[in-house]
Length: 399
Image 1: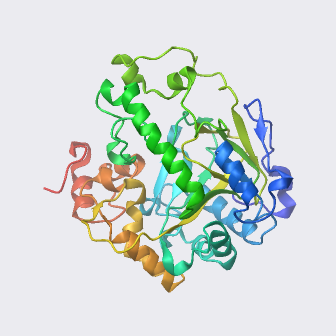
Image 2: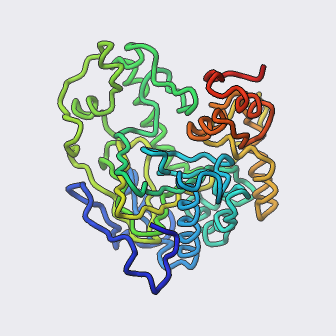
């Protein structure tokens, strides 16, 4: 698949096929009124998701679509760093290093300013204000953005999960030092129920307070996101526990009921079916996954804004590797509005760049650096690691 999608080349457009799910969720006419209407909020609260149509036929969609295609093509393993220095972002890669999600869209190295321009556009800001009770640009803090795409050669199936930590101490996900719990006690039913009460309390706040909003905005038709409606608000079933419980914890004796063969659809599972310009807003506590296939394009933008919580007085923490690139001052300089630079400042003052390759890069970039390429931040860390090659240890710091 190439990034050339001219009107005379429609025959080469990816063909949509029915997905593997047995049921689908589509936009509902009764939920078409824009903004955070009572009907939309009630649906979101009950089902854990809602499909909105606020950006259908918006002129930004074809602009972002083509930019997304260019970036996806440029980040292919065949191109390496030749078209985009993707070490300036964070690319999630699957089999044979094919990208399935791309971060760094607003970094000037990606040369696609339309993403930051849309992020700060009146159309998007008006939506944010309508959803977040009048939230204004001067009260925002920088949020994440990424592009979901599909590997061109292989099927890519992300495992079922929740975007909340339902075990242990409930600490947020941290990609370079993933906290999945250290012992079976972290996954005891007693601990899990404590975490679940916290999750339910946050579910209420996400609807009633609405201090931010994030969406999956489809730039082409997309039915790759699958979830179990209502799973955000109830205690998991024995089968869902089998699905979610890490294999290591099963092997260490955490009680569970073997009931899933690893492939069958889950009860009530649906694929979210979006048309270009439609968007999914969902509660991250829902049980969900993603599934892409080579012959159907995925080009969906995750984008949003959050309300600033006020002056920061603590010590900055090491940035999650997936967002370390965003600390680059070049990102700030490239932002199209002064208020966006203030939003960047508010986020950046809470974070610092880590001292290891794993703190800064995806595995693909770590391997390239250890293969002798000085890329990314190009500091002494990268130079020493490139010189040492495979002798450079995981999480090693500058000598």
